[in-house]
Length: 156
Image 1 (cartoon, helix red, strand yellow):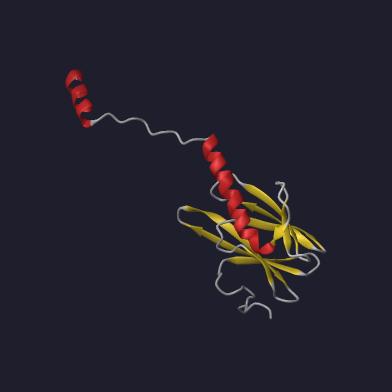
Image 2 (cartoon, helix red, strand yellow):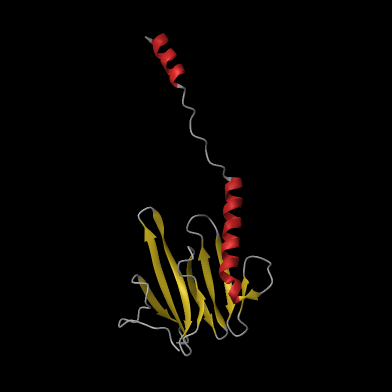
């Protein structure tokens, strides 16, 4: 059964989205837009097989920014970026076997059910690595009130 849609074919629950179809017409990719006053714009894909209505990938509200590309007869690729850090991950999805492979890492193929958890683990690890390589600059030391008073006395 296809997912419920509104009159403008936007799935319910996402007033800020856009749709793309794969070149062969097999897949519908609905991008959800999420942002806030002090947060980055995050565009997350949901991939639906049009003939069955089955949702293969759903990264909505995952806080992962991504795009779907390179459609093949057996699947597609997803590029995912961490909107809060430097991580970028390329994933190849095989829908025939319901598995995915992380392109840049030597990980074995994993089931699609573990995709979101794996992407979060990779982005967290890359954030941690970045923080170790780029420690924050400590704030300048502020003299205590007593020291400022003594300096004021000696300067006048």
